[in-house]
Amino acid sequence: MADNELTFWDHLEVLRRVLFRILGVWFALAVVYFIAMPYLFDKVILAPCHNDFVFYGLLRKIGEAFHLEGDFFSETFSLRLININLAAPFFVHMSTAFWMSVVTATPYLFYEVWKFIRPALYPNERRGVRKALLLGTVMFFLGVLLGYFMVYPLTLRFLSTYQLSATIETQLSLNSYISNFMMLVLCMGLAFELPLVTWLLSLLGVVHKGMLRKYRRHAIVLIVIAAAVITPTGDPFTLAVVAIPLWLLYEMSVGMIKEKKED
Image (cartoon, rainbow, N blue to C red; front, side, top):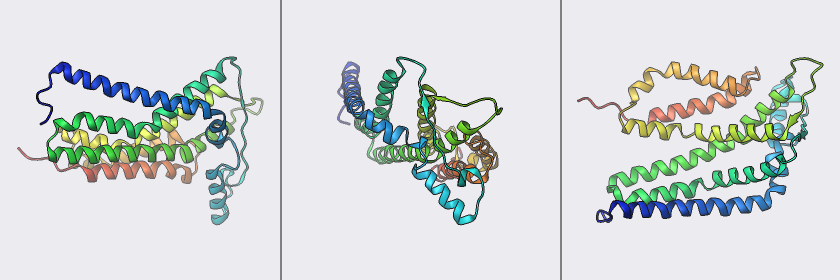
């Protein structure tokens, strides 16, 4: 291996340069997003607040095709946010720009991780780790897209229209909207890392294919419960939108790992 002659301090110096490059990319992207944020905020961040959002149009078409009469498939939806904190718009501007830079810099982060650990790997290990990092990047963005286009809009529509009492008027604040938006979209991105995490755990001997198969029914029940919590709308369509991808992730995890080797 080419880097066997490096000392411990040499490795720390290499790691320091890697961290500085990652932070530099994050900062540069954050500046770009900060400048473009007024446009991005209206067209991307607040898009689920408007009735012409692409997923709402899809719901209306599904309702018309299958003659579904539920509110989610027929009613128009529009939401206006309020701000009650003087400094909130500025801090939301900064935090959203940084959050978007972190999300979009994920491929570069994985690339730097790959460059750092590659010299210490054997050729057969390099192929496996390269595939894992590539799969992790693709799955993360698939989860982010699903969270943005489906999961968050469904959650937003349900929670913003939920009525505990007719005398209570719901007004959604800017901080509440942004915190839930970032948390839910990012959580969906991380949830799609399940196959990669399972694969890594299998390499450590923590899980194996037989274990996942044995507890498949338990996992499906937990997935349905988690989907019901994320989108508590009560109709099977919105439940399936979240539950089916999570179930497919579980089955992908089962397919990726090997059987437990006998001693």
